[in-house]
Each structure stands twice: as structure tokens, then as C-alpha cells.
Image (cartoon, rainbow, N blue to C red; front, side, top):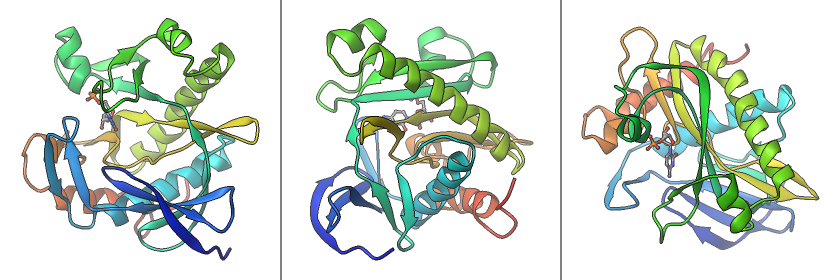
Length: 242
Ligand code: C5P
């Protein structure tokens, strides 16, 4: 598909979104810029944009083949993804299979303890407020989504987990937790944003080594190497298929 890229619509911390000559399509450009703790920590992870673009494309294709509607349309280049234009719902949905990060802090349970039934959490997507955790009543109060939309979002987030977790496990990656965003287009909902080491916690299935953005957040070193290792396992030769 050939589209013409037009003006910048929005520049986020890790991506730039461009309009195209098609009103229903946008381009996501993946940068190497990295931020953490609501942009208080900033840096660069060389090659990250390529890894995140390719890995997201790969997982969106797998999800589409399993009936999950995603905004992914095509890969235009190493860093550019053509996507359906969504009206983004201002909720960040987190699904957790293993205790880590803010759930360890919130509950006092040690990182690494498996969760028997996946935990779904909702956060209000607001930089000014620092993305506070919210519940279904807050979603209604703020009119972020209808009860029907929220039911679909929760169900679809768990479905994404059911598809992606075993897919990554076959590549020796433990999907600890991840963040999803959804949006509206053409009177229905779609999965948007990206699925990458920026938005997932991925641990080596054998050693438990962290192969995700926590290496940057926690100054663990070997950040670029971790992203490349994930790329190799998920996108690289032999990474395709079931
Ligand atoms: O920090 P926390 O433990 O709540 O993060 C849970 C998961 O959501 C992690 O995989 C993290 O990378 C992701 N996340 C994200 N964007 C945010 C907050 C969390 O991608 N704004």
C-alpha cells in the first residue's frame, strides 16, 4: 500500500504520529528515545525504535490471525508502521502474570511470584496526573468508556494475554506483565499503540534475566543487548510462525 506522509499529529516520548493522505490512516514512527518515571529519567536506547516497530508488527499479525482487531495495517520501514487512525481511549490497561514493579510495591509481595489468575488493572492516561490507577467507577465518572466498551476492553486484554504469553514462552520469554491501549474507529474498538520491551516485562524463561525496559529504569546495564535479544527471539530467523 502506498500512502503519502503528511504533517506531524503528535509527538510522544517514544513515538511520533504522522497524518497521511488517507484520513483513516496514520503512521507511527518509533524513536530510540527512552523515558521512565513520568519522563523524570531520559535516555537513548540505540536501535530500540526498530525492535519495537518490528516486534509490535509481528505480535499484531499474530493477534489478528487469532481474531483480535488491531490498528496495525502494514510495516512501511524499519521504524514506520502504518496504522488505522484511532480515537484513543484514555485508559492504560495492564495485565499481570507474575508479581513485579508497582504491583510488588502496592502489595508487598516479592517480585517473581506467579499470579494464579491474571490481574487486570486500569490507569488513567494522564501525564499531568502521573497516570493514577482507577477502577470501573472512575471510568464511568470520567466518561472514559461506556460499561460495554470497558467489558470488551477487559475481555480483549485477557485474550491478548492468552495469545501472546504462550507465543513468547515458545521463544523462551516469560511475559511477566504488559500495558495495552485501545481506541475507537468506525463504530468499533481496536487494540492500538505497541507491544514491545518498552511496554512489557519480559524475563528469560530459564534464568529470569530481565530483557526489557527495566534494564533502563533500574540502571542494570546491557539495555541495547536485551532489546536485540528479544528481537532475535521474536522477529529474527525462526521467530515466525507458532
Ligand atoms: O510499573 P508497573 O509495574 O505498573 O508496570 C506494569 C507494566 O506496564 C510494565 O510492563 C510496564 O512496562 C508497563 N507500563 C507501560 N507504560 C506505563 C506504565 C507501565 O508500558 N505508563
